[in-house]
Image (cartoon, rainbow, N blue to C red; front, side, top):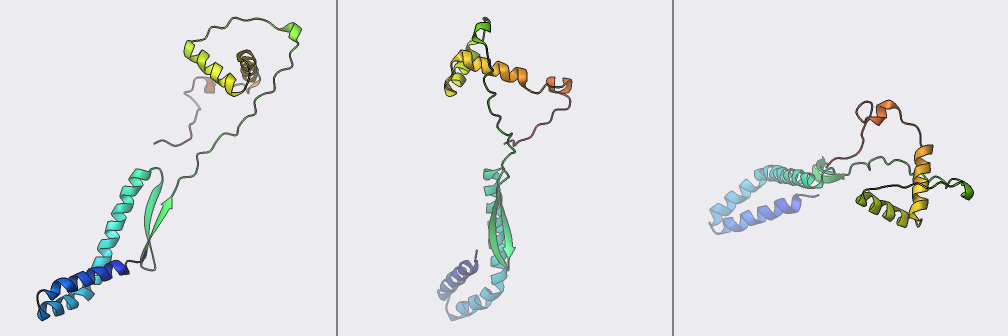
Length: 163
């Protein structure tokens, strides 16, 4: 970002204002404009830095940095890396069941859980019974959990982003 047009505009505005004061004021304005150049650039950098800080607060967890390259400010937007995602597990294949060897079970679910099970089965285009059979088969064939993982207190770590 080139600050020169902004500094030049300020210099022109100072000259226009000084014209109203006569020849002496115009000459004084010209003498003051050159030493003010670096001070004006520094103030503009301070304003840009403050703006970057405000934007960073709004974009969290992303951030905006103001960097100087060859004397010119440059904005750099840094987005956090995507949180690591667990690899998707394929749904376990439906267990090979001998239809003659099926057993009946009565299952009582809270209304909200029942509704969620029905929605999940519908998403997978399965009957509730088939979906529950797959869920039970997946739970039975899943990796066994150790005692430290069951309680959720010892040896468990959490990863991700908090806002």
